Image (cartoon, rainbow, N blue to C red; front, side, top):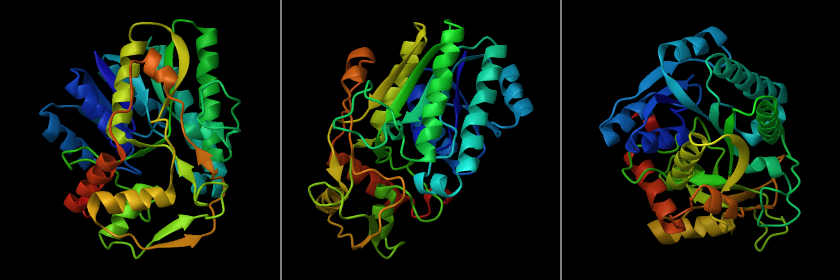
Length: 337
């Protein structure tokens, strides 16, 4: 039996595939490669010494997705595939709603047809929107501040309704905060197309001389230094959280949401300074207008994941910075090298 990973060639997906293989699972990857490269899967095989199956398939192509299920004995699905840029979702919301929600509906329909009712869904802290207080627990009111976050919340609600309609489903909704870093081997990491949307690859590309300076979006938020505060967590810790969630859904039914975060908030400027201390690289930056849909402060209360998934974030800020910088130096052109 295999674990199907949609979006498995992407940043978090590739690290999760690696952890699944190391834990002894067989892995089947479905990815359209719109925002990822197949090279990451070759790197996974190189690191683990294990094979995985890959289908270049668009989730919106129902016939092709069904073929994947017909050709493999799938036990559970880890669902990453989807568009994920907050700013872009504000500019082209219909594209986000159609792609993220319709793709998930097709996936669930085919899972149901093949009698597969176990899923780990890659949700996001974006479902919380502007929090009333921090740290954020899973039981606070949800109110996404942008279309990207609303697609995640809508999918969460769809999956909860699916369980209500058929209690043999077992679903974990993983709301993770801000993954950064890379695998310590330096062989897989975050490989964005164009100017990065996320902070750490932006920092590392400036440090490598690929970009002139870091743009910091907003400096008048109600935070200690005016820049946005986020819960930055090592991508390997996030991947291990998915592994723990797979172990849970394979042994019981139900639906539950879990924060994956460190429980600590760091501002953008604190992150820039942490990178400087860890690597010795000075990062020039420029303050620019805040991005639509961004919130001031967002960090997790990870207690539920610690107690129910037996998972905790283990890697610290220095390790996050050093691993991200190692990936950038070893792969100046990302997975295109």
